[in-house]
Image (tube, rainbow, N blue to C red; front, side, top):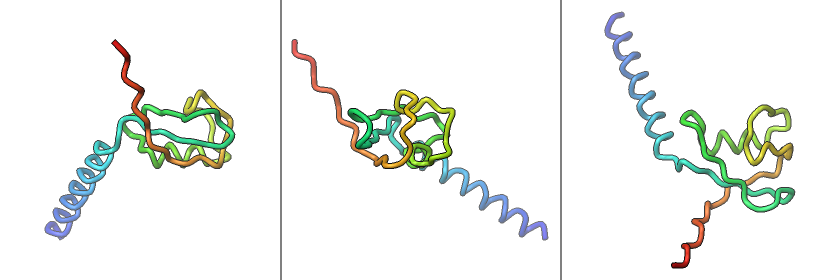
Length: 91
């Protein structure tokens, strides 16, 4: 019984590390587009957010309370986009 519990706890630790690694490998900024939104929405994600979780929030008609995309009320139709680097400043 103790061996099974130790294996379960070890497995839980590996899962936790894998999830933390996946979140840290995500870009710190996620970009989204929507036909009803002018331009590209750029979101600086929080540590516990992923681009997928922000996208799910934006596409959920019942979501509210977060300030993504200038606190837009547009729900549905959002797609993940490539974040474009700003053009270099001319000297």
